[in-house]
Length: 116
Picture 1 (cartoon, rainbow, N blue to C red):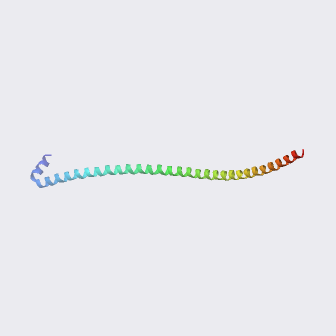
Picture 2: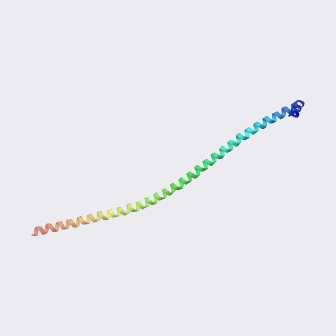
Picture 3: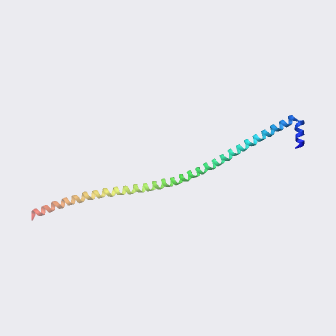
């Protein structure tokens, strides 16, 4: 330390330059540390966003599966509906035929009653 003090008295320009260098070094170190903190925050945000992306992809695949299942169920229901509609049409035709037979039988019965 004694030698440093003597050198500083002997070389004020060098001492001032060394002081400026130390100050600049501290400033650069502080700037570097700030940049490192910023980089760490960015990496953390990136990891968080990547997690969100993975969660969104998982939801997407789940929803696609649900849509596919709904489409299959809808197709099955449409087939059931078509079959039910065809059965209803056949039932209406059967009712009309039964009504016609009933009308004929009523007429025959009325004719038999008139004969008796």
